[in-house]
Amino acid sequence: MTKETKITKNTKSKEIIKSLTKEEVKTELRLIASYDLHPDSIYEKIWTIISNIRSWSEDEKEFEYLEKYYLKLDDFSHTHSNLANTVPNKMATAIVELANNLIKEYWCETSLEKTLCEIIANSYWKIMSISKKLDWCLNFEYFWSDRNWFIWIMSKELDRANRNYLIALNNLLEIKRPQMNIKVNTKNAYFWQNQQFNNNKIKDENIKD
Image (cartoon, rainbow, N blue to C red; front, side, top):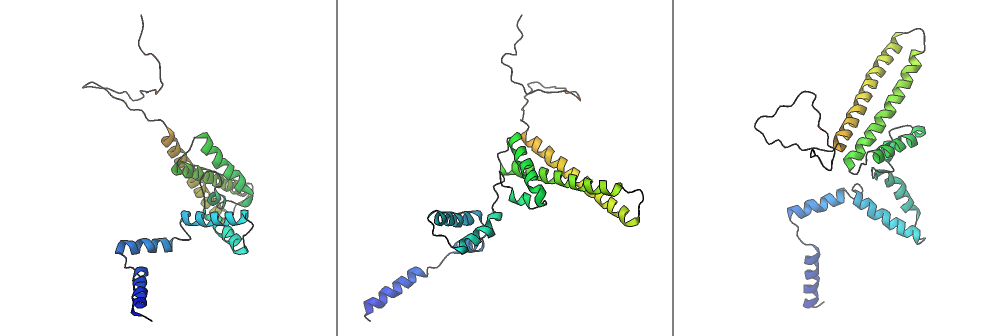
């Protein structure tokens, strides 16, 4: 082995084992740790699998990957897989449809607005489910301690579900409510308790004689 060959090998090794800065090491660690968690990594892998399926070159492991990770992806627009997993299978379709209807009716575009629709739909299911259980308990003509305790717990859960429903709905309405800026050019301005401001666009507000 000549001296020139040794120098070439050492040079290549040094190029491969390049020292990284502290921030570069952190970046690499984050990429490794989030490989199976970050949506971009999962989408990239799934796109490769889809390409293989289209070319009839897929294998069993790729289908196992799809089955394992497709539930981790949720676009908050149509599938609502996380929302569907919080309710029984027989109610999943109805709750997902409710969330989609809310998104459509309130013109939701951001992830915040869409997740509020999911919370509203989930709270609605809880209200219906708890109400059904309470109705079943109240149909009996006699009471005993265990059933009274169950009714007390369910009543508290029903109140909580109602609060969550109303809070999420009010937050959504507040976000979607058009904002109105008022500018008053005066030193003294008086506003009465029930004074109302309408944000209606009128072509001509001038009073004509």
